Length: 229
Image (cartoon, rainbow, N blue to C red; front, side, top):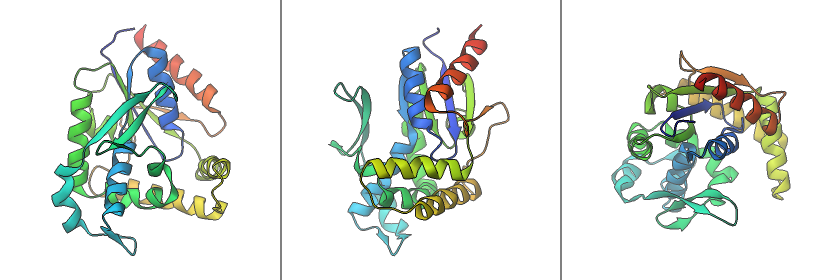
């Protein structure tokens, strides 16, 4: 396997893109970059600084402080994965909660936030040998990526996966709340004016509604194998 390929994995929320991408990167000996974690980290920063009031982002206060936001991915041997650090603090757990999930799409539609995160992503991936997942990797961040994949599943299936995840974590959230969040994120991500979620023309679609993570990894590894023959 060449060590300088750029593999872009886009798709809807709660399709398991990040887990899939981590395993694909591990199988290939590549670096995994979770672009969604960057937007979640910015969202957490905005919440911490009270730049989100009554579910509305105070853009004029957040944007000037973007240069102060430092986002890193550090490998944790205990968990065997990269974890997200915001201004040198591990925030991997905090950015996965419903409070951040509910506000990450409104944060991600802000052009200045996207420009900031895209520049970071392009710098991280400039040498290749990466698997990067997100919403606009194959369309905006790396439009010339060697291989593009688009992961999707029904909203109900995705909500069920997220609901079970919250349940395992002991979070008291109803399925209807989770489904509403998934559907709202789809609406915002797909309809935003600036760099919307869409399948790149040359992307290969993988619907994993009826596939578990292991089966999805197997399907994607077969696609990669066929590509590199």
